[in-house]
Length: 181
Ligand SMILES: [Zn+2]
Image 1: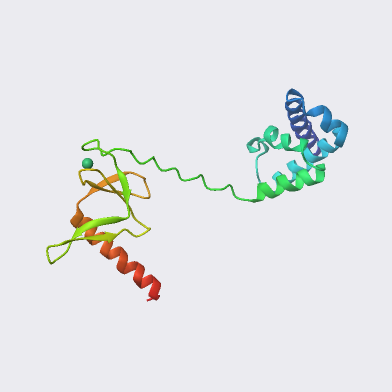
Image 2: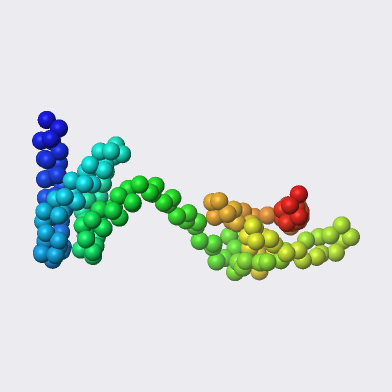
């Protein structure tokens, strides 16, 4: 019987949240302010909403969600907020890049981020070329150059000839983007 099963589920999750809130000392104020019956209604409404979207109630964090009931102005408001959160897709996990090492892995001298890289010109001179914002370059005290891979965060050693080409290409690409061609 669907009716009986639904009632059982409401009771099961109502007791689960009530026991949890009791443990936290939150149940008494909630019961006095909103009434136990309103909490039962909230559980029922959420179960119905989950059934509609095909979500298993086991997947829902009942205890954590109902802790917010302590600050909710009303049960109606609480249910509305939970339903909104259920409809929203979960945010993507933040992208964590490993920290940049402080020293050069080759000689142990201090690594610093640079905004210009000395690059040999065809006429034999060395000219500083600015690093575009889309690229991160680090240099040690002995002049080893590293590019930070902005997807994985790791440092890759680069020759100035490689960087010369890369920076040139990047500047051309940015200029094109600015001109819109
Ligand atoms: Zn070095």
